[in-house]
Amino acid sequence: MSNSHQKVQDLSKLAATGSTSRVINLNEIHKRHSNKSGYQNAPLFHNTRLNEALIVKHTLRPHERELVLDNRVVVTKVIIPISRDNLRLGGYSFFCEQQNKQEALELVFSRNDAPENVERDLDVLNEISRMPSFDPYLLRERLRAFGVEADRVYFDISDSDLALIEKFVSTEISQLVERAYDFKSIDSATVSRKLAKIVLSNENSEKLNPIRDALKLGNENYEQGMFGWKGILYYKWQYKNILRTAATHLTRMQDVKFVGTSTSDTRYLQHKLGHIITESKRRLSRTASHIERYNKSFQDFTLNNNVESFRGMILNAPDIFKVIGEDLSTVQHICSLWGFQQPRSKPNQIEAEDAFAILNEFSIALGEAL
Image (cartoon, rainbow, N blue to C red):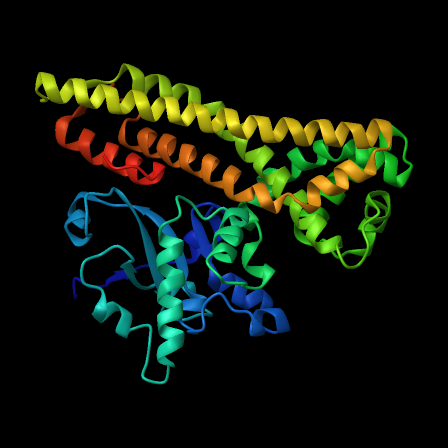
């Protein structure tokens, strides 16, 4: 097997369980939306194979590290399915960051692909690979800033995350449901649970018309408003989950012991890790401020009928998605990688080589030099 690409076995489990922030399942998006004009007219990639691939944030195994260009630990893995209709057959993969991927790219592109489309697709792929995670709201804003206006179907929450977020969203929207649907509170919980799924996955359903009317959203701004609202709810849910584990991981980072390092290296690593801990806390605090502004606006709407403030909040929400998304994605990346590298079941110590490698990865995520 060539070093430029690897054979991947059964992809069905990855496709079914991959989280929104870790996997872009373009194969599933194709199956659901390929007959829609938006999908056809505004694809994420022009190349068909690439536009039906699975793109994954992948933690390198020790034997894979020699394939990439630098000392990073997490890379972006592109998996091209052998069959779009049967993911159990597996596929071929390559890393965006690997040293020699020309042969792998020849499995993707053909002579029939226009050179300008190939260049554009590779630019988009490289931009995606630079992101700390694939959170759909951050992904959309980063690509828009890059000049790519892909159809909205590419920026939905994965099915596996939908099942987790629905209960949270039903609680969040219960006050609005009571107001918009004129139910007694004893009934609103049941209705909220049903509507939460519709809000997250089918914003054009007629069942949401009372919410549309309550928010005074016209046809011209309804989709934008619902996209903004879903994004804020997604980030509130994500923030709550990250906060639950971040304190433990950041404390273990602060208390870790370095093994096999000189006195000067130990001092340097402690300083660098302290900076990463401080920066992670700062990003969490900044996200908390954004969420608090949303909470106040929502309460002002449901209690004081200030619909203008809340409508403005959700219509303009995409303006802050890039900041919130990058902050949360970076902290989540740092904490999950530390938890993978330093599980609580093992002594809280780290070898010098591993310490420099993981701190290099953290610095890349923060956009800093080690």
